[in-house]
Image 1 (cartoon, rainbow, N blue to C red):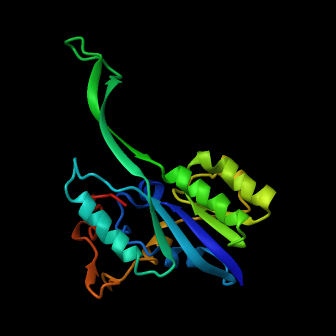
Image 2 (image 1 turned 90 degrees about the vertical axis):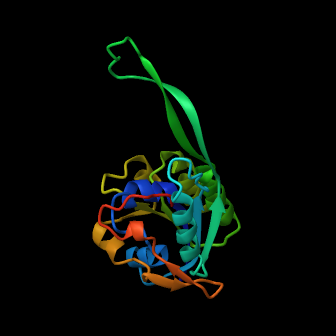
Length: 219
């Protein structure tokens, strides 16, 4: 059996594969097992995300907390937090307004830290010899060099799970293998509607996530 560690960029997964779908109640362990070979023993899933503020949608932090509690029912999951920043920025308009306005203030939201944390743990765990195979769920091209280091310099197999149906490009070129997420695979890897949390209390799928075009993100 091949010791397998999984590294998930939570926001990248959400915006590339889950937003606007009924598949947000995702059992990542089930998804990955369905994508890998039977001899891949998934021992650890590192899930990288950031706490959302709820400034624009007060329900987002509640849905995020619910999903993270669902993930923690899987004993192999460890959640790592970065920062989620919302601030005003001045942006130019593509077409100036009739009154001559060329710029407007907008709310700009940025997630900070997840990509760096993912890359750090990916390389650190490789040097420590914790896995035989790493699997990365992200389309962030900033991860090209960490993947290359793990594959070429540490000598570990590193797989890439591509999320949105496009061609992998640069990241695919530095991965040992590539697997593709599809709507049918997402549909087949959903948690049960009600789970039992670590504290023995029920965890229910957010009602906003049960409609086909359900909004309300925040992974």
